[in-house]
Image 1 (tube, rainbow, N blue to C red):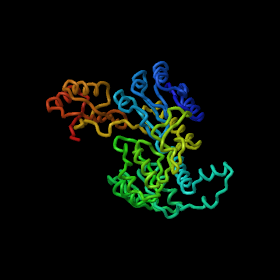
Image 2: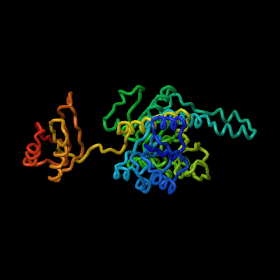
Image 3: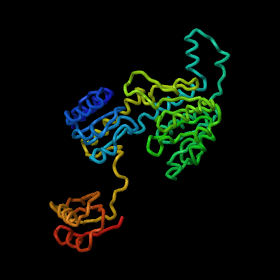
Image 4: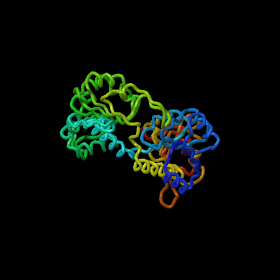
Length: 404
């Protein structure tokens, strides 16, 4: 199996892929047309990327069957095109959660103690203890969390250790899929992002970027924050209305820590201009939340696990683009002797009836003499077709139709 790696990747990961029997092509500077050409020319089966954008022309240019995002999000990959072409997309959720949570608290402490300004004045030769002795402290101040995935959970654990009450809004709680009462740290549930903002002193964003979350942190949310509140975004710039945030900094005296920006350069180094980054109350970092050695080693190991599992079993861990619900309406259950041609006969008859197979599973009984096939269909075969299927092959022992 040929694996093309188009971003910087840990040596432990390269060694792990080679040890798994993969033919590894490591070209970490590939982007745009050069990456499209490399996918075509190498005939790679698997593409591994970190921040590099994977476009429709790239996915259509070669023989890819799997794209691994060596990180948590996958909004830089054209998942819709991958799904149309039957290309798996997988990611490495949770492996950078601790690193991002640590940066959240680095930014919070920097905001509270104004550490960058302290350092700047010391380096300029100024001593100003009176000014920089002014700090509120984090203990007892309420932390609001928007989103409670892997990173939000790690932030909550650290906030609890700091003695911060926690109020959270997340779809997992809003839909009843989970309860705050079951969480390992005490927290309070809010009914909306606006309510979180109203009840907290510090608001931290941990939302994945989707069509539903784009611009979710808007004027209505930011306007509920108390003047002088702290705001931290280490998720995606797109989930925050940037113009509204800039106004809130200017008009409501928010103190803001950002690891993500609306107009980040594509390359690792280069000129950068963003009005919000120049504001006095805003501290920024260079989209480095996941960039610790520990996180990158963990992501590399997870990438190796994904690729090795695909190579050895055909199954893809952490796949993100399989249908949660297919168009199937009925399941045909066929009990049969485990002999060649039985399922081919069933599928051929279904095809003749213009009925599409959505999913199928064939389970073998001990001794490998008999099996049961469960075949999900997008419609109900008429009784005559069912009778034709059963009578057309003597190795079919029984069949019945189930509505799903």
